[in-house]
Length: 635
Ligand code: ATP
Ligand code: MG
Image (cartoon, rainbow, N blue to C red; front, side):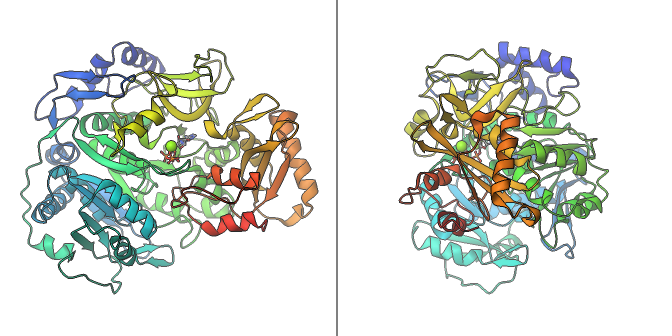
């Protein structure tokens, strides 16, 4: 019996039981039958969550790029590995076959070797969403260098601190990036960052925008010149199962970003397996994940997951609003996308716009829709279901983290019945548990608890780069023997999980534990509301009061704010109960978000408390001006 693919609900339960009772047998079989190895492992699993010293597939030897490329060439050499859709719809799409991708990765691997990059060295990649980003990542992995991709939108100081933290000696960037109607000068940002990081000896430059840029002699080199002289013969480095594959910084929603380290074999097996099942992947599918490769979603489900399965993956350089709000839907129609995976923030933004943007496109190729990054509120879920999926496509609400490597809780399309606002059931190999603050397991239904994971899974991060103590303190100390996610959740009578938000954001009002997500969900049901974020603030009588920040779709008929506030509170009272009514509502122009599109509630909490002195690490904030506007009470 093969465990790689789950066909129906009965099989899901069967595989799930096996994976929990006999994880070594379960993952050992999946690893053996679906991946190629230079040498097999001695033990499937060693270590435990008490010690935070977990190892998967000890002493196995492999290279993840051989699994992503080399092994597909005989059967799928002429199949498209990548479809590149440029920022400007008038620029032709590019179709890169597995043969071509293989050759370009091999050449790039040789370029890196010639520049002195060795196994274990760190390479920072600061590139827009263009094929060279994927090629650079795979070239690093092919020679055993540790890639650290930094989203090409971060400022010079955010970039410098990440380069410094991971100790990179080489940076790969481009002469610029197209983003909507803007051209970003990435090279100038790199130049500024490098004034603070003298250890960087080389900068490799990809040509994209033809911007005039400053070239530092002996340091900056055009990749095209180096590629022209490079050989395409490349033997993939023999990597140990636990050799580092990449460092990736978290979004920074809750504080200073953490440089999560993922290793080779466990990550590969987990991401390959979860991609296949989460998206009901079939050989001729055209898969599109809109997340930037600079985030874990992009790493796992834009790049590694699809390529490990020999799939065709779309790399989109642009933004959902350019040249108009129909761009996503136009791309789906153009490439006949079968699976579409995006974030609630994008869905909410597009749902605000005229319906004709989506209705004017033929989306009939779609089979599966996915959501990731934040809880998807019920209104956005229905809009996604009705207008994008046309009620024919299951929506998977995938819960996971940079730390977890791959999705941990999600429905499986056509297998698990979906329920809006519930991520639903754990994937095989994942054993969630809800803990109360006294460290007891919660057995009751519909009670918010601390979401922990009780058993190691192959995709889990192994450490925070350079700070193992922070790794232990953050994830393995609050609930000994368990991985603590930092998120709150509740479980319904059939065992479905609903993520209620970050535990730090749970507000205790008059002794009741309230998650932020369900309250925001209720507020967003109001037809005038586009988005909302609620936080707690000290309240004389209740202990904590609820403070809501709300953005509106169109002000129009709701000019009367007092009436609107009343209606929003009525909505909350009906959906959750009068206990959750807001004490204060502030209408704002926008919410502070991370560059990955998540609401930064910790900043709103400070504003609600009237403490404007220290917002902590704000380097990952998308638009700092919004914070000032909210502070000043301007809409
Ligand atoms: P930091 O750890 O630096 O504060 P972050 O947690 O936002 O940043 P990520 O690893 O990108 O960084 O995000 C993981 C978090 O995103 C989860 O812990 C959870 O709070 C939220 N999340 C992701 N997917 C979902 C989902 N489907 N439903 C609810 N929340 C989600
Ligand atoms: Mg986090």
